[in-house]
Amino acid sequence: MTSALLSIRNVEKHFNKYHAVDGISLDIRENEFFALLGPSGSGKTTLLRMLAGFETPTVGTILLDGKDVSRIPPNHRPINLMFQSYALFPHMTVAQNIAYGLEMEKLPRAEIKSRVEEMMEMVQLPHLAGRKPDQLSGGQRQRVALARSLAKRPRVLLLDEPLGALDKKLRGEMQLELKRIQHQFGITFIVVTHDQEEALVMADRIAILRDGKLLQHGTPLEIYEYPQTRFAADFIGVMNFFPARLVDGALRAADGSAFRATVPDTIGAGEEVLAAVRPERLHLGAGETENRLTGTVRAMAYHGLDLQVHLDTPLSPQPVMLRLTADAAEGHALSIGDTITAGWSARDTRVFAG
Amino acid sequence: MADRKPLYLMTPALVWLSLFMVIPCLLILALAFFRRGIYGGIEYDFTFENIALVFDPLYAGIFIKSAIIAGQAALIASVVGYAAAYAIAAMPKSRQPLLLFLAILPFWSNYLVRTYAWIVLLNREGLIVSVARALGYNQELPSLLYTETAVIVGLVYNYLPFVILACYAPLARMNAEITEASRDLGAGGWTTFRRITLPMTVPGIATGFVFVFVLSIGNFVTPALLGGGQFQMIGNLVYAQFLTANDWPFGAALSMALIAIMMGLLTLQTFATERASGGRVRDADG
Ligand SMILES: Nc1ncnc2c1ncn2[C@@H]1O[C@H](COP(=O)(O)OP(=O)(O)O)[C@@H](O)[C@H]1O
Ligand SMILES: [Mg+2]
Image (tube, rainbow over all chains, first blue to last red; front, side, top):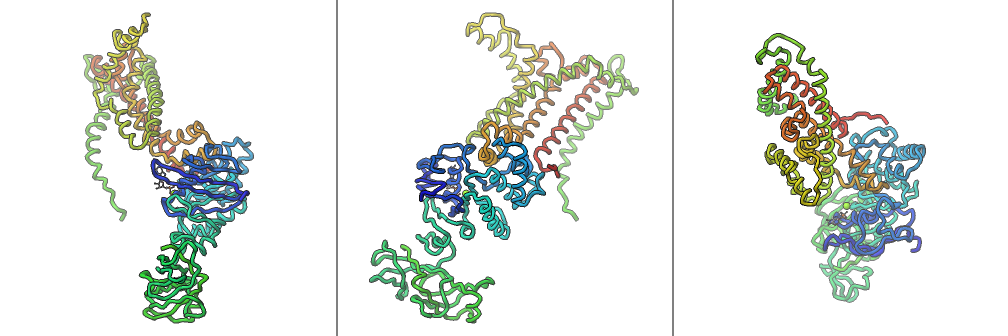
């Protein structure tokens, strides 16, 4: 990948003995909407702070356009960070907040004025120019913070949990809006989030972090359909796991039944593994699919779009979840206690080391 | 019904303040409008003479001089105190309480003792002179004690802990991400201080400044001990009216003028703090 805009090379950050970021390498392309996804404490903020220049990597380098920027202070990097707390200047108005970064560039007054107006249009806040931050709602503050960092037209905009403080509905709207703005400005966005759904919706590519390490990166589809570790499979969406053992090249489940699946080469004969399938890949009835299970309906949850059915099976101690579309659900009148059979294909079965 | 606020909890404080603050102040206010008796004492006929006398160039001059000295002391204390508070707030969080404690330690000793300590230092045979001699400086040293400078030094020293505490509070409360945001947007360290940190902590500086000014302008111990009667501040003048000149009505008039100045400043400062904290400002149209 020679077209990398930002290249993170084997970066580590140690706090005393603790490795908050532990050997991450990533290439981020021009114009990309990139998401860093991981649970709390996985090192996302620390990585972002190194990109912004507030921390220096203990090991490794960060290249921007091929030049090492690891040691350049934040005020000399064409990279801006939108802080998790938004960090608006409380003694300045919205307009003054947005103008601040432009004043630092010593732009002519008239240009600052027009750019501030443009930014306020973009985030749909021109009527609030004279307000102070504590007279704004959470959503409005978030927009001001975004406008303030974008006003400088950075090469890369870093956003630390940008939607974390917003309520669910607003978050959904802002996800689309962030994408629109990223597209409109053609600026590379790196968004940190612990919300897998958010990452799937917004990002062109996602990197999954855990304990300071990079587990996997790829497009949302790759991440969702082909998780490489059990952790990634569990962290993104919902996954049913069945303990199994590799016997004579086939997977044997706890109750003795066999699963068909592509088993990774790394797994040897006799090893304990986990077979896995997404709830929406399970279909009612045995059909023509290679794998099947039988269980009793334990609970049902109606979600409008779909019906989620929990089955008790001998395959695993956890209930198995099926997600039926409204159409499929209408065809089968299910009730609690019913015994049903569900099937899924070998193609949709993933296998992880146990 | 709106829920009742526990206003009755204020009763002891209110009673205390009215008995020992408000009533004496009102008595003094009343006193200022009566005539002095020939052998001291008070003659109860109404007059504005005492009030008028306060504005006599002689006494007005003392007011102005006191204000200048108090202003200098407050200015120096604010700069020195802010710098100290800034340094403490920049230290690791775990070490700040101890540093703060050390900074205000002198405050726990007696005011007079502290002031006498300065006499020992500044004396003609005092520590500073002795050290200068020991270092080989043999020329005649300018007198250190009983000067205006000595008074200012004493006032600054005595009230510095106030300023440190007043400035430390807003500095410690600042979210580190705010100064980082300033760096991120392209500002250097000095610009960040000038445009972000300083304006955000102005209320603390204002509180410290006004405190030192108000406490200094009415002070009579430090000018008496370190100024050595070379000059008078209002505090000394009031003291003299009550205790040596036996002119209580004029002393009362001077006190009232002093209280008026202090109240004016404290009101101004409260107002400024509220404005700067931003919460009360509505619709600052931009
Ligand atoms: N300045 C620091 N000093 C010591 N430990 C830190 C510091 N910053 C972060 N950490 C630790 O590094 C780990 C990763 O933190 P962080 O990057 O904030 O994670 P995330 O943003 O993914 O929640 C956490 O365990 C945190 O306690
Ligand atoms: Mg974080």
